[in-house]
Image 1 (cartoon, rainbow, N blue to C red):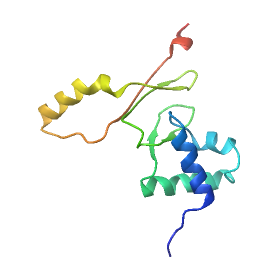
Image 2 (image 1 turned 135 degrees about the horizontal axis):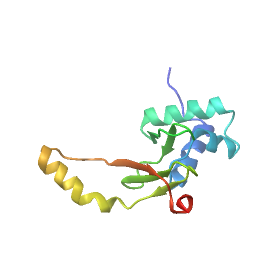
Image 3 (image 1 turned 45 degrees about the vertical axis):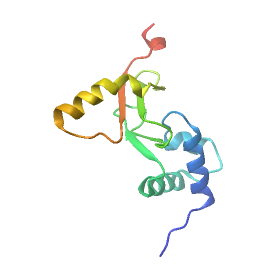
Length: 125
């Protein structure tokens, strides 16, 4: 049986694609029009298996899985443990480290997804 793309899956993909930062299934669900929360989770799982979106698992009480659109650019994120916001970091800042890793391990890096956790400027005040 062939699984088809549905309007909800298309809406989920469009929502994640438009976001610059990782989003949770609950955030997507609360935006409305995507069916119940189970439908959102199933749709996100389908899109990830298909390779349309990717996810990261965050070890934080705000929730574990965040989804993002991988085709926009190399992904580097910072996550605040206090306010639970995500911030984007320019991936080029890590290019020297990447080159050292490739040279030392004789390994070609084809994709980069990183995140750091800590406290943002606002929460440190």
